Amino acid sequence: MKYSIFSLARAALTGHRGWTRAWRDPAPKSRYDVIIIGGGGHGLATAYFLAKEYGIRNVAVLEKGWIGSGNAGRNTTIIRSNYMLPGNVGFYELSMKLWERMEQDLNYNTMVSQRGIINLYHSDAQRDAFARRGNSMRINGIDAELLDAEQIRKELPFLNYANPRFPIMGGLAQRRGGTARHDAVVWGYARAANDLGVDIIQNCEVTGFQRTDGRITGVETTRGSIGAGKVGMAVAGNTSRVASMAGLRLPIESHVLQAFVTEAIKPLIPGVVTFGAGHFYISQSDKGGLVFGGDLDGYNSYAQRGNMPTMEDVCEGGMAVMPMIGRVRLLRQWGGIMDMSMDGTPIIDRTPVDGLYLNAGWCYGGFKATPASGLTFAHLIARDEPHKEASCFRLDRFRRGATIDEKGQGAQPNLH
Picture 1 (cartoon, rainbow, N blue to C red):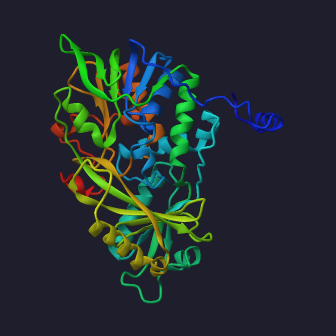
Picture 2 (picture 1 turned 90 degrees about the vertical axis):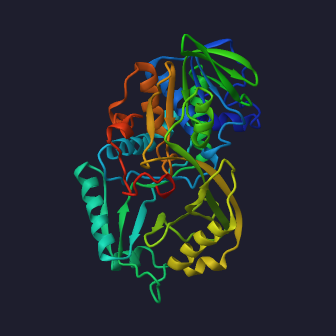
């Protein structure tokens, strides 16, 4: 069923009793051309693009829980393409362009809101670094605007200018950045992939791999054995776990990243704001809650929850830049498992195991990369060659010394 104002009007005449399921709930077939492990945004986007762009429709997406129950439903919904280094710039701008047409492509309201993002700076050195980043963006045809203190005060009058611990000197703005509804992105890709013939199989956990002469030929699951021509992994923070079933040890660590939302208040924050003297980022949801986050918990974990010291640290960052946030009650908190790579940049590549493909290492950048990740991973699986915008995300870059360290932190996964 195509969603439109006309289908809505027709449904209204029948009391909305004629709506069909957005996607099927099929039993697993004995074999697929491609199996994608992971029913989050990246896995579902990959399946959608395999069917739409490459004509491969005998595809299954296997999810151990329900689709979107992992990181896809546990992030702060920010989209942006304000990167500086070659390799990252083209990829994330591709993703931004796909975000801009997503609702038309999927025929689904993913609530993409290009409200803009402003990264605050608090020193001359930070201003120079942001100017360099902005110039790199503009050279590559990406919008960027360096704002001074007066411009920031005009756009964000609610910040702490009177007695700040870290004076706000300006910011780098990307007007095309913003937010999108994470659940709707998952549902939109699921519905569109289903319409193209993809099987979305929930409550189906992968417990092992089938091999023939060293090649992956299928998976073992809690719902039985399923054969496959190719298998792609898109399981975020569980990447190391799943890869170990195939005998792989990857340059990835799993860490917890917390996020928070407050009670609903009247409209306050027009876009996304990040604090440059600490790690704090905030936006306001359509329901009025302030959605914010900060640093990782700092230790390896597979738990989808965080600890109180990190919660306190994140809230301190918020209080430093906008003290009035202390008057708002915290509604809830949650954690997602981040797959942190050694250089802070993702991996989209074939693995050393024939027939097994890897999509991982997204660190903080997984949600905003969703559409480009799906397209480039689908290209890799279908053509057995990297997409040009993901050609730098090879697994062997660590051996070759071709790392892409956007933050300049070195081989320390929890610092990226």
